[in-house]
Length: 288
Image (cartoon, rainbow, N blue to C red; front, side):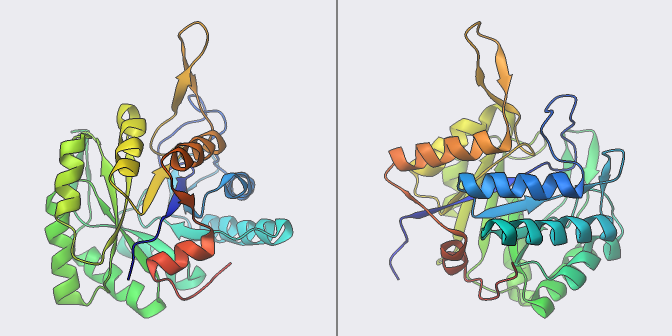
């Protein structure tokens, strides 16, 4: 099957840590998330990656908050006649297995994150994805037909994924999301990205995001290397450009998506719709 010229743009709206004090438009509350989804879908995002926060803006895995966010998002998209793939995080507020999985059973999103290993994040805390949890996550995505997005922060995550494919039945072809330049993970360089791409099993699809200063370089490298997708948004980076005085400016999710669309078109790529993203990724169950 010939590789599609369509590029999937995924927007990670907030993550678990980006604060309004630094990025005023980052969405905390379910109604803000739904409104933000509408904006980025109109700008060209086919996939939205959703984290939730508590009422104080602190990272959370609250089932109630996820339910509100997804239901409001579905209603807002229906009202605007928009289609988008909802990708829910399985990390970002708890290390209790059940709290990380319960929203998948209730809400049945089309996609979810699958962080395929543990990392000393920024050498300040352990981003733990215990083998016990990953085994449960495998069972959950298989049972509820949720497409896992394999998030790769370092090279060992590739071998871990191969293990879950072989031993726990994770479906192939698999979709990999390379997250470059997290301190404690793999550096965001073209050489390192090429190394990861070379490790991909045949038939896999892949996307790239760079954290912070590597955000734009990794986007450009992804386009040059023929990636299936790119990931942008305030979870990964808040700096958009510089003003006339040379001062760095903070962007919005909509701006990051719009820039990705413009650069992709310059690179000769067409922008995938949500339905086209489903077809590229092998998602057969539409949830919006």
